[in-house]
Image (cartoon, rainbow, N blue to C red; front, side, top):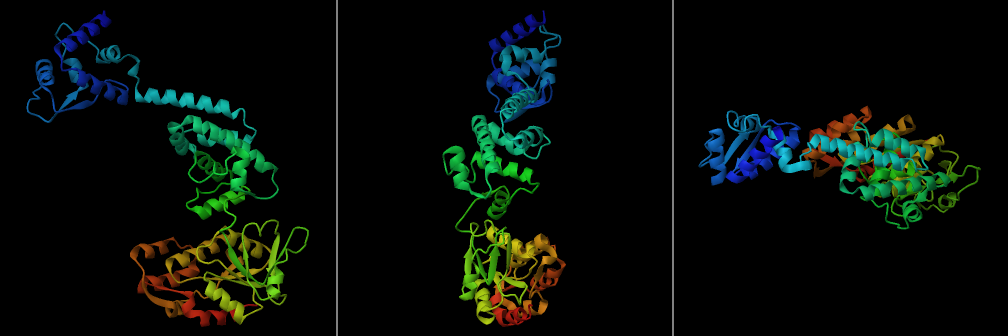
Length: 431
């Protein structure tokens, strides 16, 4: 009998006219809530809609730009009529058929289908760790990779499926490698396309998320952090542009044989190193036995002055924002029992570089020249904006706080080149 009431009521509304837009709005509200409730907004009511609302609900919509219609009140308006007891929910189902699935149910169905698809896929993976990541970090709503995966999957499930298969293959290739492999080569071996793992691709996004979880790191925020993450996984993202200047260093392989760097020191020449030069290196020390320190600076001018003034002082230059090659070289040096003394510019960016190195290497890296006196002598006429000064709040090293306070007081930047003489005096005191 109920079906007859809903059918008769729907026929009546269709015959009267003015109900189509309301029913469409009711459908979306029902899909949103999963039940009959709430209200909808009918914009710019048309004559037939105004007549329907007045006759059925005693609601005057004439002359109004919009009118609110409560679903329950619309349903109750049929009380005492020949459609008494009509169910708006059933009426909507009758009118829209299977399209009337609540968004909650629709999402639950989608999640079940998605989970089943990817769990079946993971059964074919050669990498147990990838399958574990998928089941623990990707599919559960609480997983770290869940938000990223939902965005990618909603966009193109076929592309995500293909990328996971390729990632599984890439992990198999990496497991067989003894040395870091260039990213384009890995992409070619995996996908027959050297650009398949370029930044921004679905495969790259999944790889980055997987490696972040595998090595228990924070998500990389820039190209250098991404390069570090990939290098830990055995992948070199850029072979040529990541260079670090060195002077007076010798490098040894695991078997104790030399890499031949010392020839540059004998000729009093700097050596530019990239990631390939650092492969298979186990230890890095100063060439001259009288010294067990390495001077590390941010600016090339300071580096070359050190070479000229102290030809038997080993030195490294990061040339501004430190890159992966710089990090690896410093790590090899300090792990060989050598102390690195670092100095950089007296500006927020320079202090943050120094701070990051100190956090990473601790007591194995010491600061040089970060005093209030030297900072004040280095000050330029270049003003520091409030935005740049705000970055100093991120400093963790207490040793840098006095210099940071000077910068906040004067709101000007200082540079190494301005206090070259004072810095060289300090370098001359290194053992």
